[in-house]
Length: 345
Image (cartoon, rainbow, N blue to C red):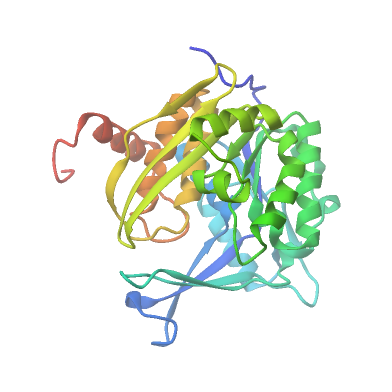
């Protein structure tokens, strides 16, 4: 079996860097203008990925900055409980320390789910590369970050470029999820910044919509991805394909390209997924793909783990998937062979 990458057996399979963010949601599917009670969860795109890969079975760490207060303690508790190393967490003791927050309202057709952010000037947004324990750079197989971190603010933008360079120099592969957020910047602003770092990227995550709208590519998706990989010298590209039937029902699959053997990998969609909570399902996809790369070094396995892990996350409340590899394997088997029963017992 041909391997995708030549790994060096380093201590951490995956290290991720990004802002951790606390989610507050009204109970019982209420809107924010109703009720008085909120449930708290902890997440953040890159942390969700690190958690997902850790739960599936590979060693991970997070590089981030948290306020040194009770909310920072809560965030650290979540890091530890998900098996992610907190060795490279930096704590903000300044007067203006704060944890980023967002409010999430569940949707029900025709009302879409809604996100309201309160993340300006968080502790992470003052984070600089010279605060990072530099030993992490040569202890890591894959470094992952996203367009969210790149677009948060000028300081986070510079941090992203610095970390990519430092991890690359340390011998790590670079994984990047475009993860466009309209509340942070325009598609044109994102495209300009992302194209600057793409030549350093080994593993890219971008949806078909991203290729067509942000990068303004036209034609057959396979042709777009193949040309894009060649243009920016990217080894591996994963592109999700989601059909939204309603806020409570989606179809999902993905297309993966391994440039080394010029081969695409795909499978039939998971259909009529019953959506409990779709937040973090994209991060779960990234986690599944990266786990498949780290554990099996095989593009078809990566595609299957990515799809199944993302589908499972849609059925789990909170930002982070808690599905272990046994559950993910069972979902893959059911999808390939057909489910044999309506209940596990």
